Image 1 (cartoon, rainbow, N blue to C red):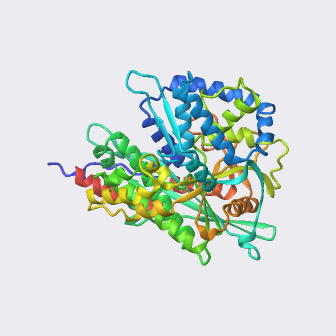
Image 2: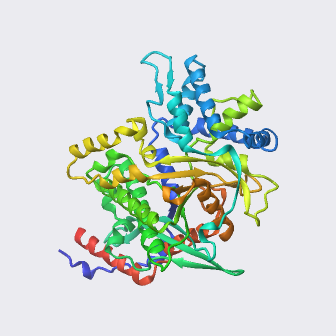
Image 3: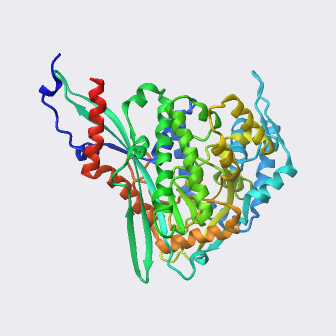
Length: 538
C-alpha cells in the first residue's frame, strides 16, 4: 500500500474555509426545524395567504390598527382573553364553516400560548368521516389560570423605565449570541478532490457599561476551546451519517443551545467580580428540544437534548442566586398568543368585515404593526406602550400541559423514570418546577418597517412583582440603547430590520466574526484534530 505521506497534501487555510462557510443564526436553525417538522405545510398557499394578510394589516396601520391600539389601552387583558376563548367556543360548537381553523387558533392561544391544560380547554376533533367539532371550557378554572398568568391591567399599557435594581451604581448590561458555520475540509485524493463537511458552533458575548457620558463595550469570547467545548462546537460528519435527517437538524439546534447556556454561565455570569444586572440573550430562553420523550433517544440527539436541559437548569439556578435579569430577545417567533387576539378584537369590536379564521400573522409581525407609533422618540426610552405580560412555563414549551394536569406531572415523570432507569430526570423535573418566563412586546419603533423582538425574562418569586422586572428591562434598554439588526432575514434576500438592544447586536457581530476568524492557533488545532480523525478513516 502506498505511503500516504508521499502524496502531496493540500494546505488547509482555516480562515478561508470559514469565510466561505454558510453562517446560520439560532433563529435560522429553529425556523428550519419548525418547517421541516410540519408534514402538512403548503408553501404556495401559505405564502399567498401571508402576503394577503400582511398587506391588509399594513394598509390599515394608521386606521383600523390605530383604532385597535387606542381601544386596547383601555381593555382589561384577562377579560379580553376569556371573552376570546368563550366566543370561539360558541362559534366552533355551532359548527361555523371555519370551525376547523378556529379550533386551531383556539389551541394555539389557549394551549400553546397561555398554557391551559386539556381539562380546562378540551378540543375534540371530528370522528372519522364526520365534521362536527366540540369544545369544552372549564370557565372558573380558566379564570383562575388567567389571573395568575396574565399581568397588567389592560391588553396594552404604558410602562416606565426603572433603574431601581442598580441605583447608586453603574449598570452592567450583557448579551450573548450563538452562530453556526457550515463548511467543509478539502481532502486530497489521487484522482479526484472531495471534501468532508462539518458544522462549527460558536458563542460570544458583550458587556456594556457607562461611565458618565462615555459608553464602553467589552467583547467576551473563548479563543481556545478545550475538549469539553469542542463536544458542542464541532459537529463532525459522523452525526449526519448516524442520525435521521430530522434528528440531525434537532441535534444541531440543541448543540447551539448547549453552547449558549455554557457561555452565559461561564463567561457572563461567573467570569467577572460582579455579575451583570441584565443579560439580553439572543433567542428564546427555552431550549429548542424540550420534549420529555427525547431525553430517552439513544443517539447523539438524545445526548445533546439532555445536555441542553442540564445547562439551562444551571443557568437559571445561578441567575436566581445573583439576581440577574436573564432576558431572551426572540425574533423568529411562531406563537400567535397576541396576534390572534388582535384579529378577533378588530373583527368583533371595530370592523366585522375584518374576519377571523383566516391566516393570522405571528406575534412579532402583528405587534410590530400594533405598537409602532410615528410619535415615538428613539432617544427617549423612559416610557412607551407595551403588551400585557403572559407567563409561559417550561411545561407548556414541552407540551406537557396538553397531556396531563399540573398536579399529575410528578407522577408522570416518575413513570417515565421507571421506564428509563438509566436516565437522570432530575434536571428536567426541576425545570418543570422553576422554568417560568414572562413574555411581552415593547413599542420602541416609529414604523412597522422596524420590527420588534419579543422579550422574555426568567422569573422567580425573589425578583419582586413581574411588572417591576419589565420596567427594569426597559431601563436596561434605556441604558444601552437600541440598534437596527439587518442580519436576521431568515433566508430572505431582502433584509428584515429588527430593533434590538445595542449590546445584543454587538454580541451578534462578535459571534459571527469570531466564527469567521478564529484565532489561528485554535483553528490549526481543530484542523489537526480533524486530520487525526481523517487519518484513522483512510
